[in-house]
Length: 476
Image (cartoon, rainbow, N blue to C red; front, side):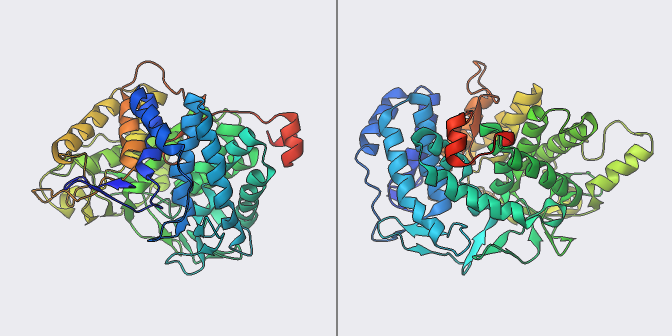
């Protein structure tokens, strides 16, 4: 079955009924040297035919790509087991009709892998920015491995639509119409947008895509200038959404991937693209945001982070930074980088945020950022903070059968929910493991993690591949 019922045992099907936890944890098993379990998994995977299930015949494209396809490709890259590539190719072909589900070529929400019929979710013929743009790493790497031109063409067509929009400030609307137009005026880096921005940088890191890299630079400036805000007293740096240029002041746990992305950008982008002064700003943003993500854990009685909060807002971060620069950098640290102590007692007035969604869903984003910040800065505090989170997970989330989401991070007894999302094994535990690895596993200049933490090896297109796929040589 797809996911474990962590409290009462047994399983449930949520993502196609093909056993998503198995696929999502393949590379985790390999990395942790659980080769016996890995080999047992191969026996099951070799028999999988990816047929629609009666309960839910429609496969959600985004989740299937990042979990199943990403898991297969990463495990293949690590182990070189042929069955993994064979199954990745078979699955990718069955998903491909999803791009025929809109008149623009953006992918529909879901596809019947037997009939090719496509469908939409609650968005009613809307395409989500993150979902439309988060298939690039997987399909382009598979194009490299198989030589299938349609893999490259379909996903690059979706990117062309995104690039052609050229939004103000580099911020893309969270929702798009099926004919390829932005819908509404809400911008964020939360669940509807997050990996779209992530994959701009990562397409360049994985395969040298200059168009994607340049869009990352434009968009990250828009994020820093418009979506980063400060609270008034603790000076917590946070990232929020905006509607018609007005901040919502909400921050999702999902947004805690952003400090890691910023840190990765400052670590990898050359000086002529990210000059020292800009790189310094990006580094401050990464460290300040990651510290806030840490405090959202440390402030709670359980030591685990809530799924969303609403912050007390003092204004845009860049305005405070500019005022600090104008003062001759008066003060020990830039705004947003103060070392705050956790606030366990007191409510909104002391913490400067109100918890909106109390649950902790075993999410990985904060740990992901700790991992990247530790690897790029060497500052041991990110390890120490990761260890605190791990201890809280052990204390409150561990069950007889596995690990469970927690209904409330603040109100005892922190009741366990009867679920263990597959990303807990794919991402949360993997990033914790790698945070404490000293053997040089998966160097950041040789591997690129997809948004489900599946590492893919950096590669270059050959001259023949560039000609076949229509990739301009100057774009590399």
